[in-house]
Every structure is written in structure tokens, then in C-alpha cells.
Length: 272
Image (cartoon, rainbow, N blue to C red):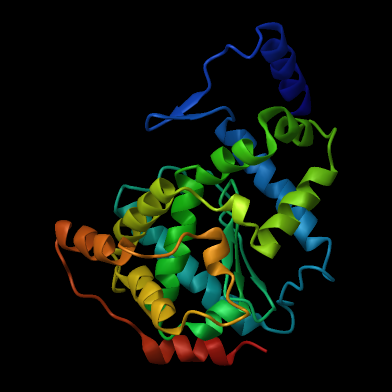
């Protein structure tokens, strides 16, 4: 892989970066899908190697929590594949992790890996809401928003140097910026609208209520202001997003789904 990347870099430099980048539904993305996966794995490895900064919940001590997390992940992915809207369902890693901190946040990496704070899981009231948040993060991965944003923030050559093994500190910087909720890493409003729309599409074929992410936003609008809330640092304020989510739901049929409040409480009870 590294030999391929070095060859590709020389070609780009030789042509003055005038090669056409990959196209993602009309959006330019300089990196390939394989590079998305590699980037996500490198940042994931950095997070897992630093438990002092990122206290990942120990699965050996809390196996039930991860069983619930993966059950929900598998349901979301199966439903998204059934909807025919998930492009990289069989290609991305889709690993899920719990960070044991009372923080209201979740974040997605290129290549499918996602992280959820215990503060967020405990804050939500039903499984449909959590599945909606998860589907929203999956949409950021599958629509390749994260790679585009990181390229804009850090620069193409800087990110590429990390993939080539010449800038190992960048993975640590990206991990820290995500954990701190750096506002610069916030997705554009267009990307957030798209992730909301696809979250509804992903969930809709399942038994769950596909409007779950809107219920989360509604809850946050009422209770916004807690010091430990940083979700809106990396996700723009809902404003009219809630209305659009309900519109998307009606457009594809308006089917009612289950919230599974009691089942979700068992998930929350399995946490520290």
C-alpha cells in the first residue's frame, strides 16, 4: 500500500496536482476509498493506544454494553443495506467504540469507525434516538464527509504525508481535535442535512422509528446549556433540521416505528 501511495504522490507532484480527484455525487474528494479506510484505521489506532486521553470502555469488564452497541450497529447496517442507500456497507470496517466520559458527543472517522461517549448514551431516552445518531454518523462515513473535511482543515499534502508514514503526529492531532470537539472540524450544513436525510433512509426499513435523530435534536433543544455538552461544537445547531427530518420521513412513506425505551434502558444499565 505504501509503495502505491508513494508512486501516486510522485505522479501528483510531477503533474502539479492537476489530476482529477475522485467524484462523490458531484463532490470532489482527492483521496480514494482505500485511503479513507487507511486514514480511519490510523486515527483509531492512535485513540486506542492512548487510554489516558481516550478511556475506551473495557469490553472484558462490560461485555453486555458492547453486545448492545453491536446489536444496534448490526441492525442499522442491515437496514441501510436493505434500503440500497449504503455504498460501502461491505467495504468499510464499521467498528464501534465507547469512550467512558460524561460527554454528550459522538464522532465518525473515514472508513466507517465511530465513537460514542457514555455521556451521550446515558443522555438519550430510547433506542430509536441512539440508532438515529449512529445512522447519522454512518452517513458521514459513507458519504465520505470526514475525508473532505480533514483535507480542508489540514491540507491534502499534510494528510497524505500521514498515510505515507511521514507524519505520525497528525493522527494524534486529529484524534485530539475530535475528542475536544474542535469547531473547525464541524461538518458543513450541507453535509449535516445530507447525513440527516440518509439517517432516515438507513433506519426506515427496520422496526425502529426512523425519526430518532430528530427526537435527539428535540431533546437537546429543550435541555441545551449544560457545561458538558459539546455535541454542537462539531455538529451545527438543529434549527430547521428537525423539520426537514420529518419531511424526509413523510416523503418515503411516513411509517411508524418502535422506540424501544425499555430495551434501551437495559443498554444504559450495562454502562459504568
